Length: 515
Image (cartoon, rainbow, N blue to C red):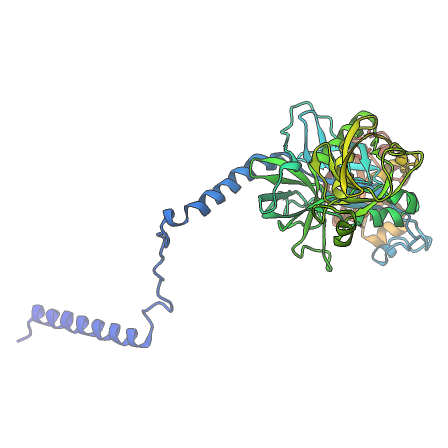
């Protein structure tokens, strides 16, 4: 007799057996297991904190230091006008202008960059001379992404130090200035830069750590550059002051002008150079001592140039043979080779004197003596201890001024046209060329954006081949309209460029007009 309850029970049992069997088969075939098991993540520290506490404390010190000083580190962009060969209208735009002449002169400027640091709340900034040398426009970018045009207060190629200034209403965060005479080899330092690239912020505020590897490095880099520069030449190159601090903290191009900072947050040097065969860091970085840089800065602010003191002698480093001949207590000091008969040392110093102290401080080599003299002012008196005839002698010298400012300054002509300053070039579209380019009516088309220009930094090059239809509120239909509209824009004001693509899409780009 058929029992429906019993039949249902059998069906249920068979279903369970089939499910279990099926799961076993699927598991064996790998259908139900994940391809990779979730790993067990370990989050607990593997080393007790107390075992590495000194390293943890140093790491915290670096973090605290970086947070404290980076607000005063800025990125600097310098523009230099360069002569350019006359070039064709690019092929990509040739279809717009079949009748255009073959030799359209491009509007070009050369952009270089570096770093700097604020030394006073009213806007004074220190950097390297080579960051701003020859620039007719300098722009400073702050950590909050604002930027300002800067004035070059003064620059000194003999020490690679420059001072620029921005005019802002608020008080700016400034770096604390240390004493580079008190640094020690082996001391921890941070090299801070704000290189950036163009308008990019990818490399803003780089911080690297290292130690002071050596002091008093005379690399002859500045001397060589001045020697090969026709504006200065061999005669003036001898006034270069090279007494670099060496560090193994990473310094790369773009970090020039940034601060070298001790663990107390004080600037002890200006990052300036690297020794490299590749152009990038290979373990040797060099900085201008801040005591020398500060002295240069004071003159640049007060006089616009450096009043370099001198003692009026030709000198060289002492070697072991000199120490033996002149009876020196150690292989240290500066050997006088010649005395300028019209200089401040005439009658006081003699050839073959060995200078071993300046104002009671030991002098070991030429670069050190030059830097210590450069920190003084013309007219000051200094006390020298020299070895003469095997015994120490005290000599007083009143410093006079080196004739370095007789060299004429180079000048760079500025472009007069607003369109050139902005960095754009436009051409007229008549009915025929407009139709060929895909536009319904005539007007003006953007044909070129100068590399490194204000327009280029705002991405205006992306609209080459588009019509420029409006500048601010003024409609433009001819190149003359464009020039007239841009001439009404003052330096520092923002100009709105309205573009239209062949498909009728409109875009606007806001650019600040350079000086």
